Amino acid sequence: MQQLFKALNDPTRRKILEMLKENELTAGEIADGFNMSKPSISHHLDLLKRAELVEAEKKGQFVVYSLNTTILEDMLTWILTLKH
Image (cartoon, rainbow, N blue to C red; front, side):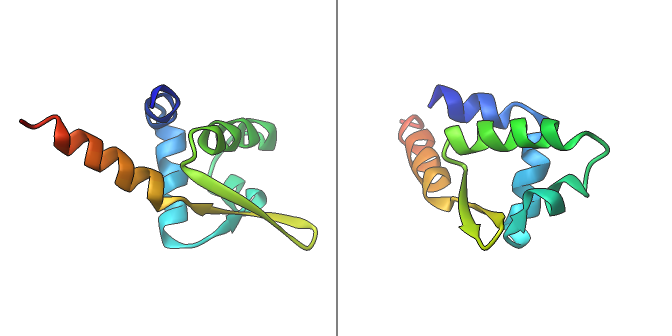
């Protein structure tokens, strides 16, 4: 859970999640939405993968990233249990 909150604490990573909400994208397509280096985007993607917020799948010579909604559903369920 700590990695999840750490990943969500950064505006760049939240924007990446917003982008992936619409469509699966390659790292290059994600990087095109930012004014930062590709290694920086790769670092953000790595943190999102470690938090299990995104999944990466090799398709040909590209790695395609998609949103992992399961972890978000688990987090929301946990938050709702705190409401008592």
